[in-house]
Image (cartoon, rainbow, N blue to C red; front, side, top):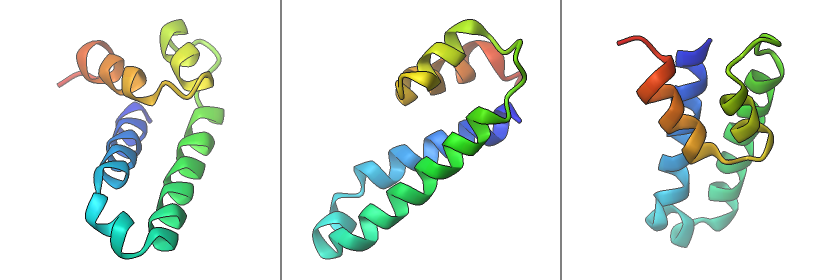
Length: 78
């Protein structure tokens, strides 16, 4: 579950940083961003209640970069 969430957060960052796509087709860019954001919301709602409190805090406040950093450095076993 955490790996899937981290993957979705990475994908969101990729979409945000894709300036070429945004300039070429802003509507498509927005749709893709909305889709991945929806996926992140669904994943967030399905997390167990006892999830790391900082991760929950970051996700509830849409601090997705911080959430991803926490996942990658502390919560996902490599």
